[in-house]
Structure formats: C-alpha cells, structure tokens
Amino acid sequence: MDIGIVHPELIYPRGAEKQLCKLSYHLDKMGNEVTIYTFEKNKNYIFDPLLENVEIISLDKKWAVNYLFGFNNLRWNSMIKKLADKIGDHDVINAHNHPAQWISSYIDIPTVWMCNEPYYYGESRINNYFHEKDRSMSSNVKLTLAFNQRMREIIHEMYPNNRIELTGSGVDLERKIEHINNDYFDSIFVGPLHHRKRQLDIIKAFGKIKDRIPNSRIHFVGGEVGMLSKNYRRTMIQTAEEYQVEIKFYDSISDEELYKLYDTADISVFVPESEPWGIFPLETILGGITTIISDECGVKEILPDNEFVVETGNIEELSKKILDVKENKEHYKKWTEKASRLIRDEYSWKSYAKRMENFFKKTI
Image 1 (cartoon, rainbow, N blue to C red):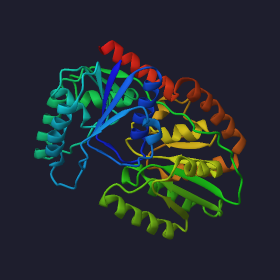
Image 2 (tube, helix red, strand yellow):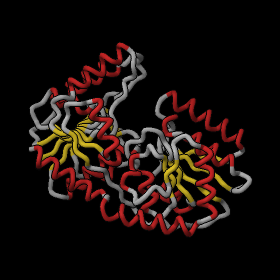
Image 3 (tube, one colour):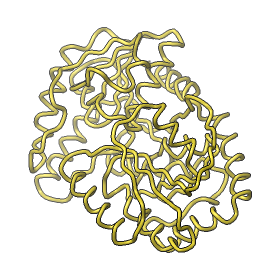
Image 4 (tube, helix red, strand yellow):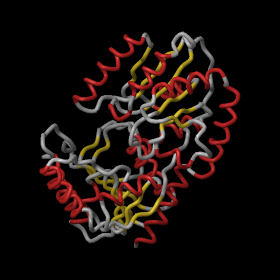
C-alpha cells in the first residue's frame, strides 16, 4: 500500500512520536510506501534513524503558540488546509494526534485516525464552539482507533458518530537491560514535565519513606513543554527540598543515555492521571524493572492483574507500594517476568504495525 501519515509535529521524544516513527519504520519494512506530513520537524530529530526510508513533508511552521482562548485552532485549520494541498495520491491516510484528523475534511482519501488522546477544550462558550467545530471536521474519518476500552468510551463520548475499534500500541527494547547494582535505590520516570503526569506524587511518596530508604533518588527524564512546564519544574525542585528527596532532571537524551538509566533503575514509577496508554512503563516492564502504575494508566488493561496498580493521587498507597517493592524484591521480580512475556509476545512494534496495516486494508 501507499500510506500517508499526518501528525502535527516531529519535535519531542515523547511516546506518541515514538509510536508514529516505529510504525512508519515497520510499515516500510513490510513493503509499504510511507510519507509523513507534519507542521514542524526538528532537523536533527531523535527518531531520524527510524525514518531513513520515509519521505517527510513539513510546512516548517510552529505547530503551537501560546495564543489564548483556543486561537491555536484557527492556525491549525489553516495549516491543515496547506498540508491537504501537499497530500499525494495515497491509498489511505493515517492521522495521528489532534488535529491531524481534520485532514479528512479536505481530501477524498479514506482516513484512519489513531486517536491517542482526544483534545480537551474545556467548558467555556468559546471552547464549546471549537469542540463542535472539531467534531464536525472529524466526522469524515472512516475509522477511529483507540488504545483500550476506557479510551474507546472517552472517544465515543466526544465523537459519538465515529466508528471506533481497539488496537493497543507497541513496545520494544533497543538492547537488553543490564540491571547494574550501586549504592542507591534508583527510581525512574519518563515523560514531559506536566501536572497531569503527577511527578509531585512520586516525590512526596519517596519523602514519606525516606527514613526506610535513605539512599533513594529519582530520575525524571522529559523536557519542558511551554511555560507551565517551567513553573512545574520549579515546584518539583521546591517539593524535593521540602521532603528531602534527591531528584535529577534529564531533558532530551539519546536512547543509549536513557538505557544507561534503565540499567541502574531499581524501580519505575508512572502514576499519571488520564493517561491513555503508556509506552514508558511497558518498556521498563519489558526490561525486567519493577514498575508501579496508576489506575488511570491505560496499559493496566493489558497486564495480567493489578499487582502494580495504585489509586491515582493516593500518595500514602504509593509510598507503601514502593516500600513493599524494596522489601520484597523477588516476589515482584517474578510478576515482572510474567508481564514481560505477555508484552513481548503480543505488543511488539512489529505486531502493532501489522494490526494497523490490517485496519488500513479493511478501510480501503
């Protein structure tokens, strides 16, 4: 097949962008032609090695600016129109993150929307207007794909007329995790600095048990996204000082630098709110790192049980679970191995690309 993929930006090393680039890589390996259309792309993008055989067409325009009252939506609509003029003669279009699905309003090619996370507009009158406009511009999508049942329900509530199927996502490791011991109890988190990711909960939970785990430190991998992230970083630093917890920040780092952190990690903690999926916790589980997730983390639906799931925002429960992992290492190691086998067998990037290819063929 000849597949066009539309995605707002190729800038950040986030999960959605990794998903897109891994998908493109494997679709190409499977014999498909792949072209990516985007508003903005970094010249030296972290996932460029996956895109060597993929044509990339970029408007080279800022995909987001700090306009108030939703006026980014007006820019996005204009930019989507410009991308539509550049769309080639493809068999199918795969739209990814919002507002990529709007492309379906301007082209006749069947569009499959990988809806990682619906865009939230808020409740004001002007935002309600933009939501109705968004719903209208998304109505020509032939098929909408969701990570899991919970996300399917959220998408259906926001886009009740869209046909929705489940697909999950994928994960692989670039190399084996070495599990190097040192004098610390190291925890790792990967994701952008944002209040919805609830990094403060992790700091506070470790602060509650610092006397039981005095040599702990937390590694936060993920850069700032806008001014709010800068303020949130300052709050994290202040909270760590208050709770006497050692934290380290890493912005955009290479895969090898990330894997060196994985090598030394004793635990992975990922407890966000309203998280549609979560590639990072799947990576750490796959690597044999004991991983705690929140009950609003979408990947919990594919795990064998709720052994590692804690209530979102429950810092007391999280601190107890961290301490239990520290004191019952072998028990949790066996569970992690069990979950790792399931992920490796059913949720590789290649398997995800094959599922997507099948959805494209059915849509055509």
